[in-house]
Image 1 (cartoon, rainbow, N blue to C red):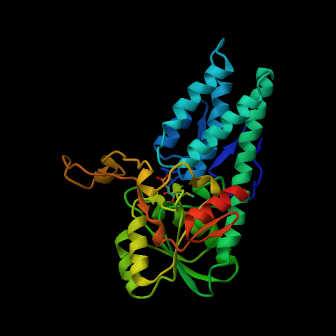
Image 2 (cartoon, rainbow, N blue to C red; image 1 turned 45 degrees about the horizontal axis):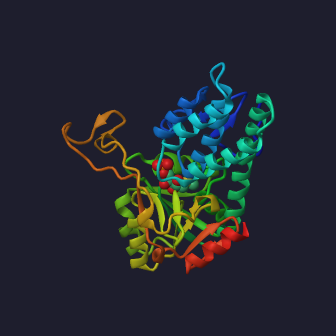
Image 3 (tube, rainbow, N blue to C red; image 1 turned 60 degrees about the vertical axis):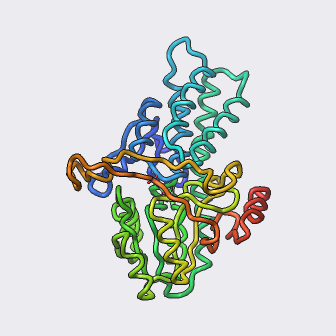
Length: 351
Ligand code: MRU
């Protein structure tokens, strides 16, 4: 039974009598859904980027809490199991703050259910996780409406990594903005950075834009300067994994390079993200933990060595774009503008 709402929107996360995640490591070659029957399978899917993108990680983790309670050992208390699964999931990826955001909300919901019987607790937590899934799609639609309004007829936009339906419960953040601008007739072309090393741009964003019938071309990450110097880019829109209280933004490695080039060429650079990606407890970008991944992701590709087999590599998964390079942060409550300390504080208070 399809329980999740917004069924018309493509989602990489679905609940069919249990949690299923689209294995994004295989897209676009194959569409394989992973049955996540244990919290360990959910944690593994997050770690190996079968499910990825900050909001999608948060929603998958919320569902993972439910899977955890459903699979507790005989005699284990729900509280003990909840804590065990929370600790397992929170360690999976350090930068995407939506993970902590969703798990902490799950803990609040769970605590409020004290006194109910086990079945009531599990069913209520499942209803909450599914509501979080539906709410993420609605948030992205609102965010897309605000973002679509900043485009002008004929604009050519560049995006980095994948901040589309696949990276969320559905519709996407940066790709949601692009979709909304396209539907308004205000977007003529999308430049899709391939996004080394794991090619979230050329594999995933290109797959989404093909399905949406939005005109695009994939470019190597190193093409951005050439495109901008030829006046071929009017705007940049990217997603975020964590936005600090001052607006500094962590996103996929290479985003900072794009932002610096955009500043050099006078191209407005926007971040699109839900308020759940803003972390008011992280004061600045230098306080954001940056995930460092396996060097093999850089030296091997699809099982083939692309460096000598003894080559070492550095694999920062994210970088930080300082707030002064960001023209606006597109959220579900509007487009936040500098100075971000104030606009972020007001936006979080209003929510
Ligand atoms: O390592 P990934 O693929 O999880 O990185 C994803 C990104 O950097 C996205 O831009 C970000 O999470 C925003 S997704 C709406």
